[in-house]
Amino acid sequence: QVQLQESGPGLVKPSETLSLTCAVSGSSISSGYYWGWIRQPPGKGLEWIGRIYYTGNTDYNPSLKRRVTISVDTSNNQFSLKLNSVTAADTAVYYCAREWGDYEGSYYFDYWGQGTLATVSS
Amino acid sequence: DIVMTQSPDSLAVSLGERATINCKSSQSVLYSSKNKNYLAWYQQRPGQPPKLLIYWASTRESGVPDRFSGSGSGTDFTLTISSLQAEDVAVYYCQQYYITPRTFGQGTKVEIK
Image (cartoon, rainbow over all chains, first blue to last red; front, side, top):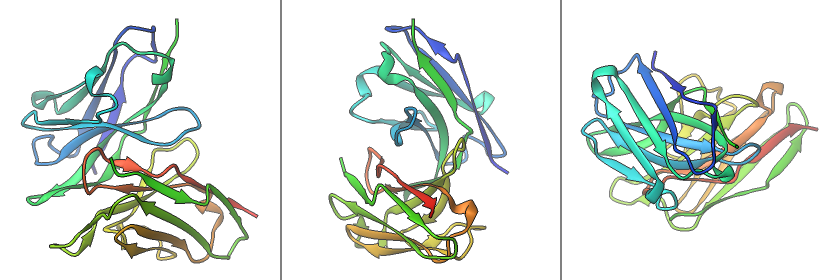
């Protein structure tokens, strides 16, 4: 069974960098899928942040692109998110998820982590 | 970006009755050469992550009850719960995976009347 688990500080100060890690078990991160980050502000909807392939290829949401970096650590079977210059608007539950795909493309999110709340406050 | 718009924002349905949620995309998500609609539906219960229900617009994920069904093509899609159960109280989201950035509808909250 594939499992994803987010971890990272629950509280980040404004203007600093939010750093989260997603540990993957039950599936090799090098097995040919994209791995993504999605966030959900309290009481609001879902926003796709970006994704990474095990080779390091990334795609980012243009709305966040200048502030986001997603990286992969294949030796530890995990991937990470860094969001810099955070403000209160970045307060959200952050989810990591696997994007199911095949040799033709990458598609829907079939496995999700439980999510971690990151609060931006001084 | 492809904008996904759901309707209604919320609905209250009696137990055992039908619930219908609509999703409209700002451009077609039908990949013509494959004849597949790049559209998924998710269920999010309170305090839980989203759960995949439907992909390719109408294919149920393994283990999803058959009272959930998806339909539609191109830009207009529907999620139907044929006989609402108490455990179906949740927010439902549609999502396109035709292009990046991936985008979601704003969500539809389903409650018991």
